Length: 228
Image (tube, rainbow, N blue to C red; front, side, top):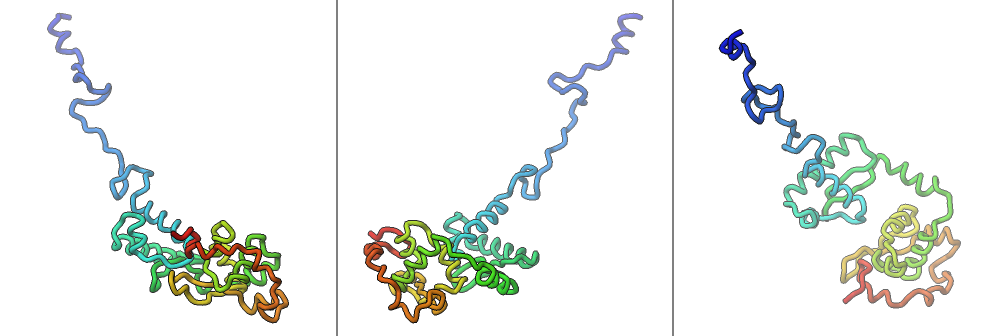
């Protein structure tokens, strides 16, 4: 075969820099992306906001205004309102045991009304056990310092008492008793059920324990922080 014939039958050289097997000028397929342009499997900013709002609202004991949430997450009030409303609808559609409600003061998780009977039975009749040490200590502070705020109870005990206070309220041992005139914090006192369970006619029959409680809790504000 002549040199001219060999040149005609030789395969064309691939362009320099092209991957083997790719034709010149071929366009590689794009990586798939999510609806918001994020990479597959990546969380969207709104998904993170939904998660973070749930985490915060799960631990609060009072409704949180939209403005406070917007400031905490550096988002607009409109965006916070839209996401919270969406979460509320989602919980309702799914028939969850709790719902997210907007009340006068803000947003908060609540037990769904149709579940109230089950919760009450569990906390009162379904748990005929001794109170935990933490609950007993918290109840003692309320009994001897009433009416008293959550923050000041926490100051006496040295730990956050919000969860224990909620349990005592649900068990009917303490109840709200108005608001502090200066801070607006909820105040709590013991109930008649408390006296009944202890076999007392009134609070005057409580043992003289008050002198053993610290007197400097007036130096704390209603969040449990040292006042300045």
